[in-house]
Image (cartoon, helix red, strand yellow):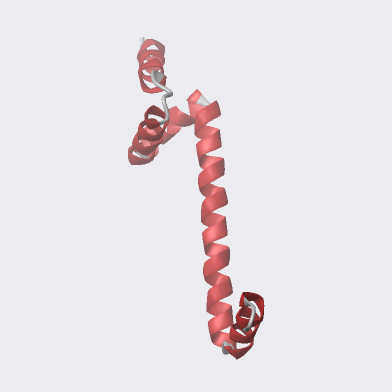
Length: 90
């Protein structure tokens, strides 16, 4: 019986070079997407000013951020932001 490792190595050797390049490209794109989403979330989570910029330029992204934080029990961010932004206009 062959081990899963030897089977994976054999499959990797039989892939043609184009398929390997496509696989690597997809893998890199996914990693860039994951790290990009993490840093965007982190910036939005720590900067009210950045959230205000996002509300003007990309309101749908701010909406996803607010819903995800509320889903995990962090309530009141949206209300505090809106209150501060209204007070800063006056």
